[in-house]
Amino acid sequence: MLYVPVSKKRILIHLLVASGVALLQFFGGSQVFSAVDSVPRKMIYEGTLMNSSHQPLSGNYDFRFSLWSDEDVVGTDISGGVINTLSPNYLTWQEVQTDILDVNGTFSLELGKVTSLDFDKFNIPEIYLQVEIKASTDPDTSYELLDVDTLDDAVDRMVFDTIPYAYNADKIDFRDIGTDPENIPYLDSNGELPASVFPSNLPLDGTTSESFTIDTDDTAAATDSLTLVFGETLQKTMSWDGLLDSFVFNDDVKITGNLIVTGTVNGVPIGQASNQDVLSPRYPNSLFVSDGSDNQGEMHEETETIATEEKSFLRWTTWEATLQDYDTVIRYTLPDNFVSWDVTQPVSVEIKTDGTNVQSKIDITVEKDGVAGTDQISGTGIGLSENAWTEKDFVLNGVTSWAPGDVLVLKIRQYAIDGFDSRVSDVFLRYLGN
Image (cartoon, rainbow, N blue to C red; front, side, top):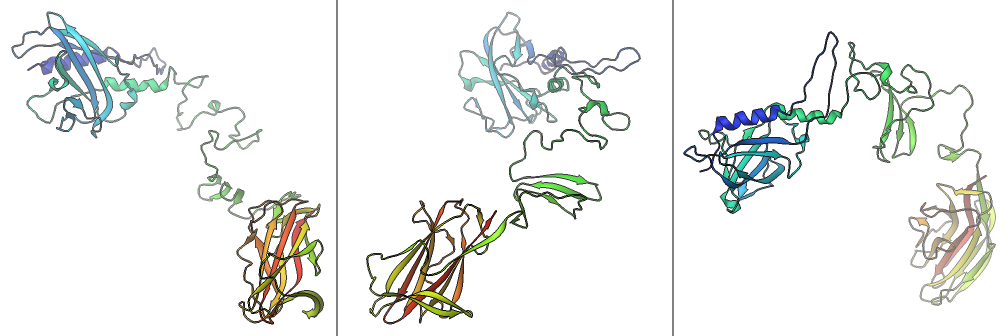
């Protein structure tokens, strides 16, 4: 069996690591802090390889090094001569180096020469180095473990002592402790950072500056909230709510002076008024349209008192034994002062039917000219049945954008059968305008 005497190996490793230490020094009466990334990213591993008779070996040998989080080698860590990279204790680093032993059996290798050492791994309490060797001509299944304690089956790998962890100083990147430019700031005797380390335009004392940015690294998502908190106990906040796309105060707001608003208050735009256009039969810019089947009947324009007001209406009737229908199509051009549709009642139509919806009914759809076949009504205006005059309100889906000059196409389809009739009167179009 090939081995390195345990005590010999430990001594050599300790000497090796000590050669790369980054020292903290103190000069004279003043304390000088230094954190310098001058440590090379390699470590020397050297020793003497002997047989069981303590005779030095010579020739070509492969050394396989790997890092682990546990000192015990279990059966699943190596399979068929190959390191199991899925082992829970494996720290994702290994490399193989070949060395030619001299007549004294000595070797000297640089860990990290083949596969770079990631010293960020030295952030857990203990890391263990596993070393295996074989003759270069032998297969991987011939690797033998350099067991650091042959008397304890649970101790197979060498633990790194304190010194390799000094490589973590790499993160400090050639910076000294202090308050000068490019220094690493430190807490003073009050446990605070000195004001001199902050940018001059940062208002630490409540004074104003040109800007103060929260989330300067842009890590907040569009739907996140960014909050200023006033008082640890008071807990009064001013937040930007990404979901609401608005600023939110968690208490009352008092304003001394003028309030200038260019948007809306409670959803109602400032400087904009509610407008209503009423279209009565026969509606302007309208025409009658048949769909080519089941269109036998009569369309009459008549008058009737509706809610104390005499109004005209269109009455569709037929004597056919099957349901017949006819369409009225109204084209309405949005005026120049149009801003947006009313939120709750943008479109309303007065209707009345006779009997059940099997005997008469009304379908109402809204389209935008150029977007044919897409009903803009949220919900349904199909199969409407009312035995008394009723103003039916319809809400638009809010998906399609509207602007002055766009054309709303309102389609009213009236159905009737065997002497029954359906009736429509005024159409109301409501919007916000300048």
